[in-house]
Image 1 (cartoon, rainbow, N blue to C red):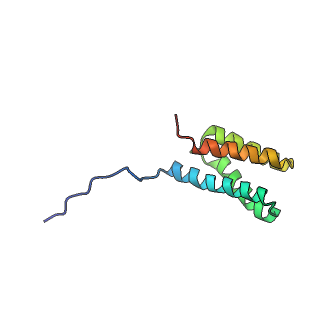
Image 2 (image 1 turned 90 degrees about the vertical axis):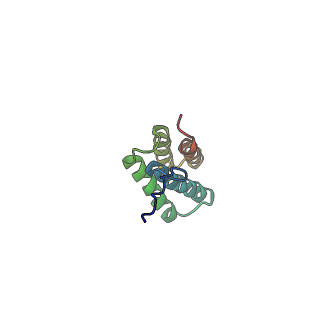
Length: 100
């Protein structure tokens, strides 16, 4: 006797873009924490590199989040820590806001 097929459930299923956004949120949180803790550059640079790669190659993230992340990277390069954190938090907000 064959086992009946289980119905496919979409509850709890995470899309690829959802995973991408969660990874990016994790990196944004890590970078904010690194800035707040005045972490050395050797801790900050790998996080920034991952975020830069995401903004250049992941088309699954909201355009406003990409703009804020690119702005944060530019501000960081200019040595503007407070503005960098502000842009990172704005990006995180865009990443966690449900689509309209």
